[in-house]
Image (tube, rainbow, N blue to C red; front, side):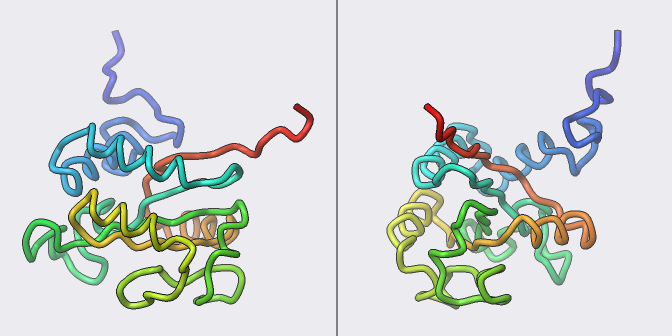
Amino acid sequence: MRDERHALTDEGRTLSDPLSQDAIRQRVTRLAFGGDPARYDEFVRVLDEATPAGVEVILRGSAVTGHKWHSDEPFDADGTGTSDLDVTFVGGGMIALFREFHIPEIHSVPFSEAHPFAAPALGALRKQLCAMTHRPVNLQATTSLVQFVRDVVMDQPYLVLLTKPEEDDEG
């Protein structure tokens, strides 16, 4: 019988690999949702309801890696709820909801306390997500090209929260 920890995931990694989607989901649930899968599932459900077809929603940052970007300081090092969640909408025209960009029309700034007017149309969603998680939630949009570069070239880990396929226009 094969050891399940060595079974390949969709990404070609083993389940024991700390960068597999399953391992990252478990880390995110433990760090950001107090180890409660139901809280994580509710977060994803709210995102799903607010996300149009053709969009992939991913989570990046310290909740994924377990430590802050420029340091080895752990997630929530300053106390529960002090680290933020970095949600990114990939594709599907979500970039059109943003007013501020790192790369115009291609990669937005995060809609956050630092950029409170970056995406007014997403204000209610951000407020709801922050209230649910008891922590800041930043929303960003990017194109699949930028996501590809961040993933493959820059090797930045992320968790796929949901993928909404394009709607079939023929039905």
